[in-house]
Amino acid sequence: MRISVRYFASVREALGRGSESVETNAQTLAALRDELIARGEPYASALARGKAVRMALDQLMCAESVALQEGSEVAFFPPVTGG
Image (cartoon, rainbow, N blue to C red):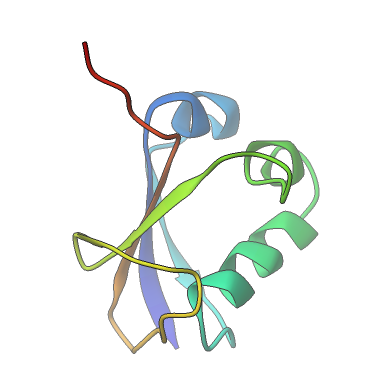
């Protein structure tokens, strides 16, 4: 399936891009993250499992277990703090 992936803040800086269209076999956000990590650098560092990375599906924050659908928009970004 084809999905749209957006990257924000430090994730975008590390990858050198703000978005891309991705053809994937991933069924969940977790599987998509693993597919991207498997691409190697710079994805491996930016989305590493030990890093705090938040995810949204179609502009709603959600857990990694959420299922992907054709045409979904996925966003990856670091945790945000306010002050």
